[in-house]
Amino acid sequence: MRVVLAEDLYLLREGLTRLLEAHGFTIAAAVETGPQLLAALLEHRPDVAVVDVRLPPTLTDEGLQAALAARRQIPGLPVLVLSQHVQQLYARELLADGSGGIGYLLKDRVFNAGQFIDAVHRVASGGTAMDPDVIAKLLQSRSCSEPLQRLSPRERDVLELMAEGCSNSAISARLGISDGAVAKHIANIFTKLELAPADDANRRVLAVLAHLNGAPSQAL
Image 1 (spheres, rainbow, N blue to C red):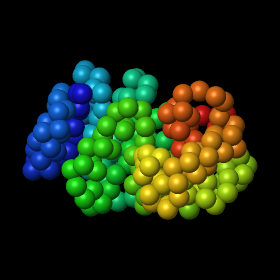
Image 2: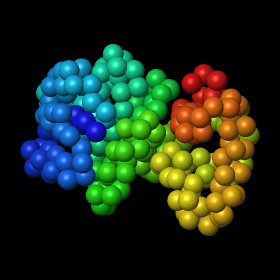
Image 3: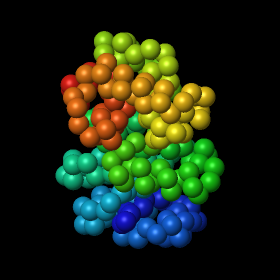
Image 4: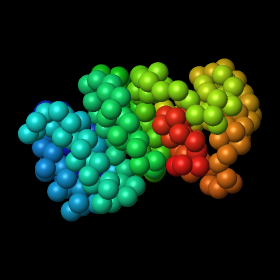
C-alpha cells in the first residue's frame, strides 16, 4: 500500500516513515510543505495520504487545503489528517464532499502503533477514523436533520462509535451489549436514515457522514 506523507517536523516525519514502513507500507513521498504535498498527491496518486494540517509556507491549514485540492482532482482519494487541535472548520471541510476515506486524529491521542496503523488501513479502505473529540465538536455545533432525530439514544451511541471506525465487536465491548444487539441497532440506523440496500461497508460510511454532517442521507 502506497502512502504520501506530509509533516514539516523532521523527526516526526522520519518516525512516521519508519513506522509505516515497518508495517508494510511503501512511502511514495514524504514531504514538508503544502505545495510539495499537492504535487506529490497528483503525481503518485497514493492509496492513502497521511497529512499534518499545518504545513509551510503559512503554517495554518496548508496541509488540509492541499489534500482537499487533490481530492477534487482525484475523487475519493483517502486522506488521514493529523492535528494538534480539534478545528471544526477543518473537519467540516474534510467531510464536505460526502465521500468516505477520511480520518481526523489528534496527535496527542494516538497512544500506540496499532491504533495509528489501524486508522490508516480503515481510511485507505474507504472508511472513517475520527477522534472522539472531533466527533463531539461536530455534533455540538449543529442541529440534527429530521432523519437523524429518528435515532434512539443507543443508536446514536452506536453511530458515534462507527464514526471512530469501531467494528461491531468493538462496539459490543465498548457499550456492553451483544454482537446481535449491535447488528440490530445498525440495521435500524440504516432504515431510519433511509439508506437503500447496498454493500454494508458503504452504507456504514454513508450513515457516519450523515451523522457528522447533519445532512439527510439522500443528499450524500
